[in-house]
Image (cartoon, rainbow, N blue to C red; front, top):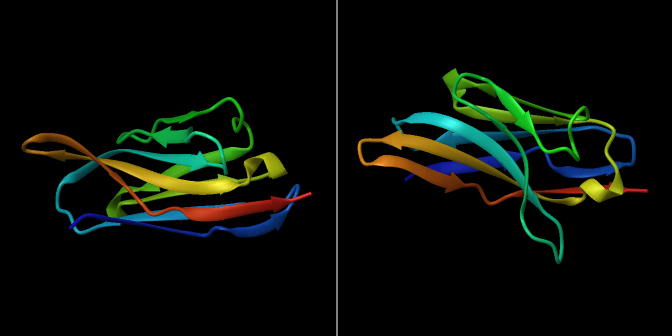
Length: 119
């Protein structure tokens, strides 16, 4: 059973920083793209950042220059370093990972970790 477990969320004041982690376990298949999404109360899920299997990052405009996504392939882990946080960043942050299987690419989600930024 594939599991994605996020950690590192919490409460921080505006201007502060947090580092999220997401570890993929329960699979021997290759983890390709990994990404972070977020969902604030009453809003749709929003793509935040992604990193390809080759380590190329991409960012949503709202976080570019403040957030940094990275991955450790040997650990099947993806990180999200978040700096200069503002109350608008408050949301549940969810990890997504794609696996390359003999049947094709499958997409998996974690349960999410809460990030709360106070003004």
